[in-house]
Length: 324
Figure: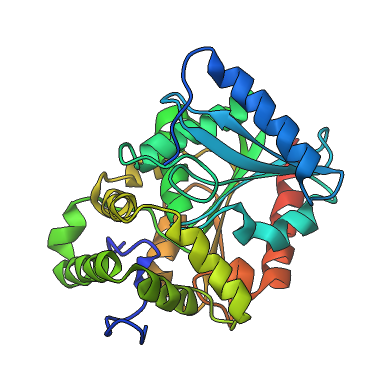
């Protein structure tokens, strides 16, 4: 399995700009009070349907982690983790479809979307702790954990740190698990390109992000939708965004976590992914894992082909639930 770019190979080519792409944390006894207040205010003013809500939990290091919660509270639980620079709304098509039959939770990872911004601990391991905190605070057990791109690294870190006791199944979307710093030596050209892209992102944030969104999502989106995606990504401080990229790709070899997965696992890849072979190899290292590739989709496969992705996920969930 090639130590690859873990989803970042979809990012835009290097071009001149224009042609491509914190909140204070609560502490002490204020934590529960703020969480309750936030939930009350959110539910009072939200435009979401009555069956949906949004709220936050407080992480072990006093960051607020925002989430969307929709569907039957007594149904099976799906927890969606977005990729780099994204918020929970990137899963809107899945939230709408699966909240009819499941309880659906989608989070904004730390330093992204409506969650607290921090210049420290922007690692998959820290985000794994946030996922665990969401599960515990909301009493989610068992959970089908679904992660895309950076979210795949978060799931690997979660399994390594917390095991699979709370999991009913896993879905890894269009990214292999990172090999860590060894990838710099094994694929120096890819590493060089990654760091060049980071430099472009640091110097020209909005143009770079505009190009990135157009590269990640194959289907063109309305200007307003593109602007919203970029605006969400702009909420992440540049230094935090760069730290995430480095730590996602090179911070640790997370491949050993694959051997610890003992739950049904689905790998969903874009058929055109430059990392399809790496994802196939990853699936081969997970006992009983299934890989499905989806045609006519970019890295954001579930946005480009929501009906096909949802059908694949629904079939997988039926198999998971048949085991119970």
